View 1 (tube, one colour):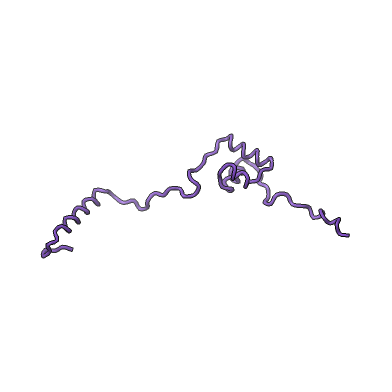
View 2: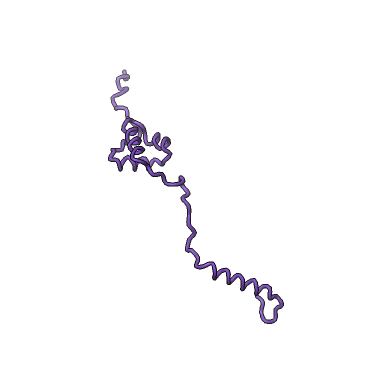
Length: 106
């Protein structure tokens, strides 16, 4: 930088100003604060909304339908149902029995 034999004292003055600003700004944070990036703000369900989700699921609605309707992730719908004591159905809906269609053999 600028030493004893330099005519660039303006650099030294700028450096001194910068040091003052750094000292006045206080300690640095280790990491900047981060906002939620997925989905937006966390949605808190009212007891009425929870009851509505449970009733629709027990009436036959799928978790995929409920997630779209209530704007939440499928795993959140599953969590709401489990916390309400609902037994989660297996994936894929109703399966056909193995005897259906066997009478066509002939």
